Every structure is written in structure tokens, then in C-alpha cells.
Image 1 (cartoon, each protein chain N blue to C red):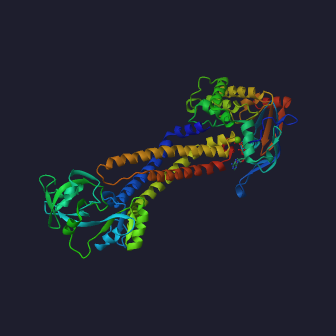
Image 2 (cartoon, rainbow over the protein chains, first blue to last red):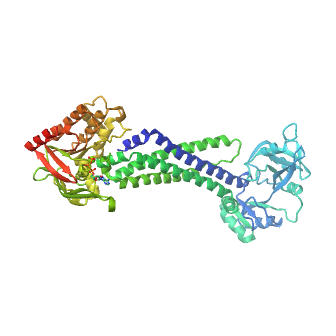
Image 3 (tube, each protein chain N blue to C red):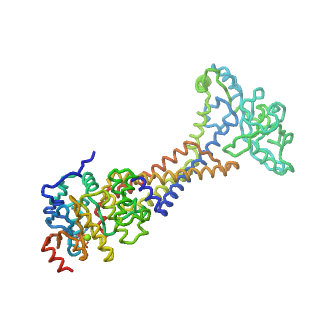
Length: 379
Length: 250
Ligand SMILES: Nc1ncnc2c1ncn2[C@@H]1O[C@H](COP(=O)(O)OP(=O)(O)OP(=O)(O)O)[C@@H](O)[C@H]1O
Ligand SMILES: [Mg+2]
């Protein structure tokens, strides 16, 4: 009987297209919005992919990676002396103003790296030499910086060119690739000491300390030891990511606004699919009654309706995810809006679609269960 | 797992016996008594017509006898099985195994081919798809539609659709065939053709056909006619009385 159930479903072209369309729309909207949301969330932790370290030590009130509360220079040595710490280096991060050639000021994300080790260096160099950061007044910039700071130049900013950070000259010795940051500012890497020159002088300048555990110890174990012994806060990368994303959930309207659209997609999916499927059942009620008269049990009819609902669900899900992926591929090169479609997002959409299908099928099943087979005798 | 109702038998060859059946629809002001303490019997091998004015309860009688409608009181026994004692699921099984249906509106599924429509009772009975379709094709051949196997109901005339419905009602060899106004949507020639097919089916041993009809052109095919009036059986005609009845209703 199941092949007949499918033929009954697909034979009714208009309803079939409506059902698949509704579920496609729901799957697309939920997946696309969730992916953009995940993309934005991933921006908030891009610091930890642009500068890599196993343990991030920060002032004890820091809640997330994009926040800095200055520490004392001596804290580096305190961390170094903690048992289990292989090495620890100072790390500077701050938003400063850089001047483009046309005289306008552009905010940049300035990163200061420990000159001897260059721990926290960008993952991919496109041109130039990172080692030359050890020379005075030098910087390595990312491609977004080239875009932003080349305004007013005859030729894009390149190796050997200079621009001003906070009224001090900076000479480009390398170009790197970075992952975009939540704030949308370009990255400028320099040495730690040079960064202190660029930044306005303050009593405490150390933003963070990057550390690695000794071989044989986990980052988590060592982070706990650092916290215990120094009173500072130490995060592993997964811990810092989670803390950052939690912070976004608690302190910004971003999740709420995306959730609203995602829930809207879900509600529209429930409403359109439920309604269409129910009217499909009502339109076929005489035939379902005839099947019942001929001896089809309620259980069999219920399974047929579930099969029909899940068939359109599966197709709608496939097309919806596919379209979301197409959208992703279209926007990824531009990086705007951010897009991160992972297995978890696909599973969330799948669960939502399954729920919609069950809901739609249940409406029909309830109707069919109450149906008296004798209706087939009525004209 | 289900009870098997295919080999049951009444002692006295009564295929259907309804005794003192009452059925009311609705309640309060809209309450209608459709069957009033009605008693009705059909024998095996018989083509039995049920006639009477509109609203007298013919369809209701057919519905309760077929186990598709609950009734208020009275006993119904079909091939020796007392429907009163059965659970809904068992009545469903009973219908599947024993009853073929033909409706005034044909009730074929428009999105399925004729073969697929006819195969439904076999599939419901657990027959494999290929075998069900082969047997359905053979059955369609028997009702003269061997060339319409892959057509959909919408491509057929009324008479052809009713023949598909007959093929569907007969394909699983049910013992009781229930028809509500099978000819009323058809022209006279087609109607006769349909009646001949049904009469042929009824005459098989251990079988029985009950037809509700308004159509006096069908009376000549009857072995017995039950005339109803106002929710009750007014008169049953057989043999000589049947011939007189037919003569006066020509
Ligand atoms: N579902 C229902 N709800 C309420 N009343 C009903 C229902 N079905 C039938 N009736 C009423 O019960 C009575 C018997 O109806 P039934 O359909 O059995 O008559 P019938 O002899 O088949 O009539 P017809 O020749 O017009 O088909 C009628 O008065 C009818 O209005
Ligand atoms: Mg009727």
C-alpha cells in the first residue's frame, strides 16, 4: 500500500508542490539564518584562530576574548613560574586609529607579539617576512587593512609602504591572511614593544598572556593551575570560545533577532505544511474512507500519512539545505554576511522538519481515526 | 495475529442476518431514527435487492450490515460471525476478508491507474504487489477492461469506472458484495451490463450480493427483493410474489 500512498501524494501536483515548497522554505530559512548566526558567532572568536595559543591568561574580570583589562607586566613572570607552563609570552591587543592616505582615520585591531618568539603570529603569510617585525616601526597587515588603508593612494598599500598609527609611522613588511573579526576592523600585527609605542601610554599595558602547557599535560590542567597560583583567569581555546559565545548570548540582541527569524521559519513551516497536508487529507477523505471500508486499519492509514508527510519533508529538507549551501557559496567569497553551515545546524533543521512532518501527519491521522467508513455511502 | 474470518459459516445458509436492529442519527431536535427494530435476512448464492423511497434507511441498513457503521441495538450476524461482539479492529479485519464494496460514486482513487485501484483489496489482504497487479489485470480483463489497465479513472466513462469498481469489489473473492445504487449514475444499457456482471458474481456458491437500488430496470436480476419503508422492512418478495412485484413495477 505504501507505493500507492506515494502515488496519491505525488499525483496531486498542486498540493505536492505546495508541501515541498513550504518545507523547502522552512528548511532554507532556518538553515540560512542559523548559518549566518553561526558565522557571526564564529567572528567573535576569530582572535583565537588569527593568534594561536593553547592557554589564554587574562585579568580575572575578563569574560570573553574580545575584551581586555590590562594586567601588570610582572604577571608574565608569575605565569612563567607556574609548574606545568612550558612558556608564556606577553600579548597586546587594542583598537587604535590608523590614518589612510586621504587623511581619514580608520580603526584597526592592533596585535603586539612577543618579539623573540612571535607567538600569536598570523597563520598565513601572503607576502613579506614576519621575522622583520623585529625591526623598529614595522607592521604586518591583513588584506582588509590593504583595502581600508589604500584609500587615497595611487596604488594599493604594499610592502615597504608606510602609514600612520596614532601619528606614528608604520612600515609594512608583510601581508597576511586573517579570519575576519566580529568588530570588522583590519588586523595589524607588530611586536609587543612596538605596539606599546603605537598605543597611548597607560599605567598597565599588558592585555593578555599566551601560554603553552609542558608536554604530557593538557591545556586544561595547566590553565587550572595558573588560575589557582596567580589569581588570574586562564582559558583554554574551547573554554574561551564558549565563554565568548555565552557572553554574546547574554549581552547582545544578536541571538534574539536571529532566533526570531529561525522561529518564524519554523512557525511558517508548521502552519503552511500543516494546513496544506490537512487539506490534502480532507480532499482525499472519501478515498481514505473507501480504504477504511475495504479493511484498511487506522494504523495502516496512519503509517501511509506519515510516509507521505516524511517524503515531502525529506525532499523539502534536501532542497532547503541545498539552497542554503548555494547561498553560502555565493556569499563566502565576499565574507559578508558570514556563513557557517555545520552538521549541528543541519541536524537542528532536520529535527525541526521532522517535528513539522509529525505535526502535519498527526492532524491528518486524528481526522482519519475519527472517520466512519460509512461516509463512502453518502453522495 | 488477526482472527481469521474466512471460513466461518451460518448453520442455515443465511449469509446475513440482522435482527431487531435500531439506528438513530444525531440527538435532541435533529434526532433521526433511520432503522426501527429492523429484521433482514439474505441467503448465500442470492442477489438481494433492497428498495424503498428515499430516506427510508436503505443505505443505513447496508452500512451496519457491512460493519462500517455502529448501531444502537439489535443483533447482526454475517456468515455466522456475530458483529456485535467484535472490536473495531476485528470488524475491520472481517470487512477486509469478506466484503467487497461498490459505491454509487465509484470511489476510485483518481491518481492511481485502474490496475492499482483494483489491487487495493489484495494489497490490504497482504498479497505481494506483483501478484496483486497480475490478479487485478486478470480481473479487469474479466469485466472487459483489459485494454484500460494503465488508464486513470478520469480517462474512463461512468460505465467503465463502475466496471473498475466491480473488479475491485470482486478481485479478492469476497463472500459478501455490498452495492449502494451501482447503476443510478449510468445509462440503461450500461446499467444492464453492470447488473449482469453482479448477477454472475452472486450466483457463485457461498456468495451473496446485496444491492440497494432505486432503479426498477434492475429488478429483473433479483432473487429476492426487500422493500423498506420508514426505517422498517415492509415486505420481502421471492418466487411468485417477486414476479408479481416486478410486473407491477415495470
Ligand atoms: N449521517 C447522518 N446524519 C444524520 N442523519 C442521517 C445520516 N445519514 C442518514 N440520515 C438520515 O437517516 C434516514 C435514512 O437515511 P438513509 O441514507 O439510510 O436512507 P436511504 O434509504 O438510503 O435514502 P436514499 O434513497 O435517499 O439514499 C434519512 O432520514 C436520513 O436523512
Ligand atoms: Mg441511500
